[in-house]
Length: 209
Image 1: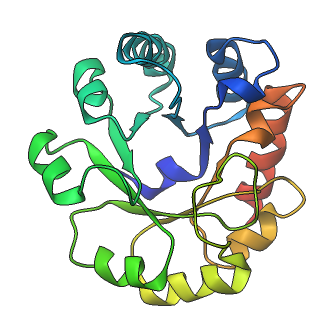
Image 2: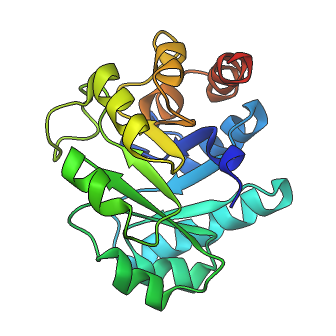
């Protein structure tokens, strides 16, 4: 996995899509410059989650954009996803690595400095620094890192860092300057009236740093 793959990282949220399908939102965001898409739909049953994963995989493949599956190793294997993202309450990284093909990359959410320290001994390909700011889409995490917290993580880890949580065009430049290699966004794209335009604006900020 090239770290540039993580530059503008869309995390899906059907509830933010305003009645539009995920496929419509993702397709528009891809047109605008998204470089990676994570399917995170915790309310879906396994059959529907897999169906959604296969649909997005087909949509993304012609653009050479990787699909990342949140949490569900079984779904990632079934749809042939390029990546998996694991949180602190998901399957342990070592067990996931044994189950996944070697070419499938693993991202891991870190919520404390202890998590960051432990990541050095784990077979992970990037860290999701979560959350940077308070956000309604991530309610089961520790207090926000803030920009100074992100700087601390940058000093402690050589892994690519993907920042997530309350990120939008108004603060994206600050987050990148604090050490993020990529920006993961949910509402800023899924809830945008025009996801394509929103992605274009974010990519312009990212590419200028």
